[in-house]
Image (cartoon, rainbow, N blue to C red; front, side, top):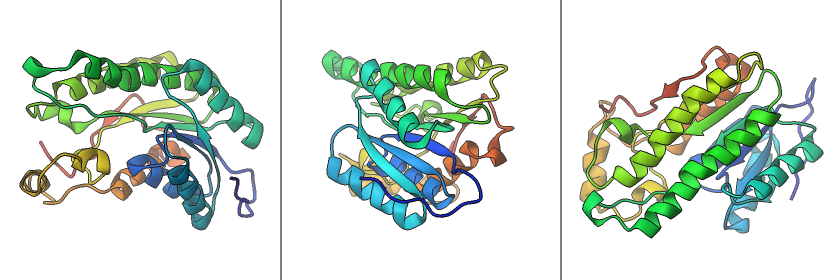
Length: 252
């Protein structure tokens, strides 16, 4: 499904948003579209949710298409970028919001589940970042996703946090490897945010306890994080480079 762009004085900037059918990725699609971006909504599973994200982008004033791809599959990701270039003539930002969560005490870690987590969160980040590093146009941005849980040391989070620690290392090194390309590389590290990924498996008491920890005394929302994404992806945020932005309401 493709939507028509709103009239602009110049060609709109183009973003690929992985994991764009749900949660923070989906809200980032809508927010970028509101700024006039053309967006490629990548998804892994639900075509219905991806098409809903495309419709929301149209309602917000942008243009969007949905493309299915496993972020850990290098051929599928190359095709994802090919489609973006064929449809919109190039790529100015990549927002790599796709990811999965697996929680368990270290003593009880299921190694198959750990491998699946790392395939998406680490290999998938390398695959997407590698393609982005080759194709994002000058003046563009690469945004990866970490987590503020890295600094919070929550029990059971070792598998997930370990994978996001790798993302932060990739971010800092890739930013330096892009010297001379005029492309920024940053990571967004949300704190507890009211998404299905975060809320799944947590009881009301746990959610309330986590919501009370930031000085702002609430969970983050996908819209909170999407505002950070929109800033870092835009020319307004282009002087921010090689950083991990902990968007968490002040939780420490």
